[in-house]
Length: 158
Image (cartoon, rainbow, N blue to C red; front, side, top):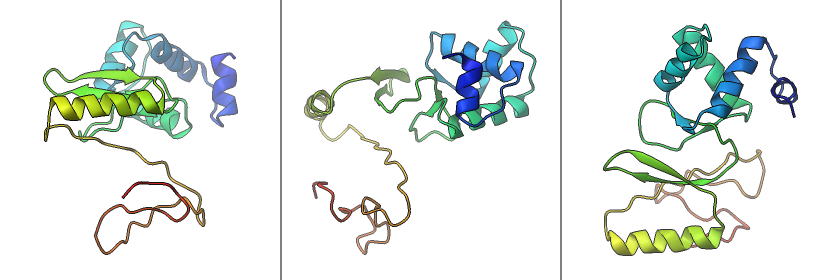
């Protein structure tokens, strides 16, 4: 599907500059980009845009599902040019981010290996999607224990 049509299907206008930006992001060899990275790409490809306008465009693309947001503890947003849900490994030593497009079984095996190889040092961050109000899959965040507990009807382990 053409990028212009993809923007329109997502409910966004499709001016030439936004189509060019999305094409630039999709063609980038790096899939995890901060605003400064995108600004460099835009400048290298003579895509005229200011920092504030570019930040708004990136947020809009992410809000409409055309970019992902990398789950991170950093203050600065990191955008993922692969918007489909997938896992990441982040190596703190050099800040390398590795995409993991693997089955749930393989992901669990990778986590088991990492936990065994670095006992007490591995941090796992899971981004849980928002659910519609009234859904039985919603998470009760008001639990007395202050943490996450099993939503009704879901098979989450305790």
